[in-house]
Length: 356
Image (cartoon, rainbow, N blue to C red; front, side, top):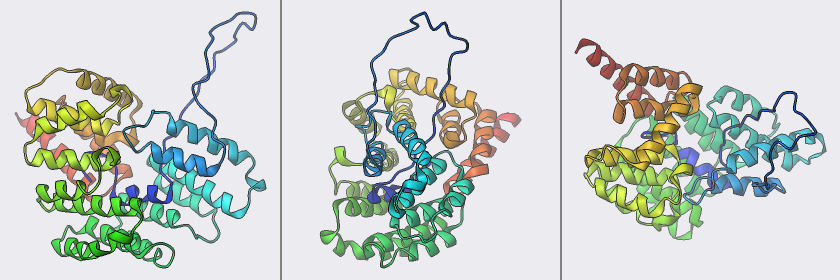
């Protein structure tokens, strides 16, 4: 709900061992000389054996330990399984459709993802409902999201279903009453699964931050080990530190915990770079890597990361017309409250720079 496209419900999807992904393109050389050795290499990716493993691989992409190839591997697996779709049983078909829908969601093809889910005649999986609710939130339809969350009741734990409902409502109206409504269910976390408990506290942290209580947000996030938090929670943690002006905490912690900046999530690099700039650090390896990543996304006119690109050109490398272009591109696909605020901010910045 900040700089990156990662809503609270999307984080819940991993509880069902399903996450989203983006597709990869592959090129072939034209007219090769088959008598020549062009290059040699060793296989770098392990094949995915089944749908369960694919779900786990995508879940692992949400953490700092990710190798960076998880989404590509799952995309290849999904394409392979689709060829034998008719031979799959009903449960396998449902799980594959959900995986494919998440791939579409990951590149902001929300309408296509919803259409894809219609292949499932009778939705049974909580992951499918969580996905549909998240898409509704990203499209700015909180009412539809809550309606979908209600369908989770009886299909998953009440804590998960209730967190989904309150989170959907909060996405439209950041009311402190909703926060207290959810917090009242903290007593049930002792019997919750670790993944559900983690998500519950992450949602409370994000709500606290939006309500202006950064200290409370940090406290809720501390309910879990820092190294075990998903990247989405780390972004909330960074924003909370920004509110308390603890910029050195962000840079020092990330420098110790991020294993490889070349494979790090762009949203995380963006927070890191903002924290560096706040300390007067104008050049660094982190900022160089982020600049390279943003250059590629601008060239591709990457809609799935448009919010990050817009924020980059507002916060780091000020280019307000370009920031507005990507904020508008983002708004074409995602219309949550955070997307609206980003668009309004980019418009104001662009007008101010034009009149200067």
